[in-house]
Length: 442
Image (cartoon, rainbow, N blue to C red):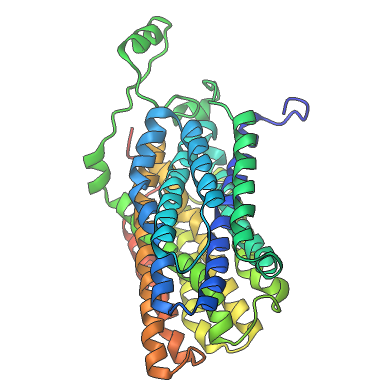
């Protein structure tokens, strides 16, 4: 790092970007490998939906505990432990659709482990990244999710074809353990910053509660330190936080439904082969990667050049992203060709990613010292969206199979895509009414 003369906080952002990339390779990889294995074993759509949604039960349970653990023990340590746990699970568990109990336990474990990741990341970023770099840093970090999903959609179907579904688990475990080695080698806790903009927002400060002896020592050295007492009641009654929560729910409802069911839509709804689609099937997620970073750069430009206030910047990007995405989602089942479906899903996911420069960075605006906690609360809602959306979609498609005899009819898929489209419109108005870019938690 020192040889390249790159600030350490940039390396931290790059490593967290790689972290989210690997996590979403795992998530997409499981949906691809399990879907192919389950279809071969004759598993019905409702049962597939149940297994695919199991991950999110574990994920939901560990979001708030993940924020608390990152606050108490440090995001760096919690992040490493999480990666080691889910990577080991992938390595040890066989992918057999007929061993339902084992798969459920494995997906719950992976979900619990990965639930600690994003609260830990946001705790680390709140410590390392100064306010004027937050939008693009968070956008770059979260864009790793989409690049990982794109890479998974591009590479993993071929891996399954030539090496079998179990090979996906092994590849994911190797990636997870490799990242853990890099994090252990290069990550560190931040120094106390002297940057004036950073210090004003708590950048470089420890977010951990200090013991009495530590506080006295700091005070004798002339540096004031605040004890990190988490204001749980204020968090749960805050309307700006609820605006973030509602938008996080909607974003993840749309994302998880498409991530888990888009392969089925291509194969059953449009009668296409994922292997034969080539690189086009990765475009929706690659588009998210591009638009997420565009949103971060645009947001920081609007704020630093004082073109718009922080509040108006967040509302502007959130509104544009979610409204365009809603139109694309509602139009998706109308298009019956590969290019049309890829275009619509790319627009929907791309503009949803653009909207993350609104709601997904907002918790660092309003509560930088409790970023991990607020992220945990918000991401719990997003995870509940995964549980509800993925499982509900399976039941909708199972009912459609009974009504229309198969899933090739556009009517079979209309409700699947209209529901997240309408949620996007509702969430837009919630964020416009209740969000703020001002710091409301000291």
